[in-house]
Image (cartoon, rainbow, N blue to C red; front, side, top):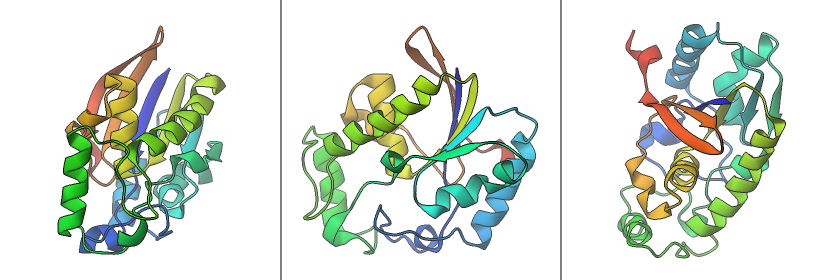
Length: 198
């Protein structure tokens, strides 16, 4: 199986540096529309067997052109972004936000904001959703998810170590290509932005 996994296109929250998790169902903005169009034009000749998105509309909007042209898709709620709880909608240069991330990288993976979600909690639901994709057993799939979701999923399936999550850099519509062969995951491309750079 070959997995194409992208982060959704830009939203106004991304542009303004606002913490945007599972509670914010925002649209992509005009820049995001251009990014998604560029992604479609670059990869439209790949025959994706199926597309998987989260239940938040910014992921579907990013890959909607593929669906419009006949590729089947499925929403998987387990792919929703992490919940940032009481700090949802605040600026991402918030000191508490930086401190929380530091505790995760130091190994406190049960730590979370009030009313929020920890990496361990998120990892469990992400893997449940991801297993649905694997069990469908297609040859070539496209997944569109979220920034922290991408980091946690990759650090789980590649390293089985969530403290390594921040090594997986991401950008809006940045693409990871991963081969899944004999129960092993291998990264072929990492945060590729070829479609933006042409």
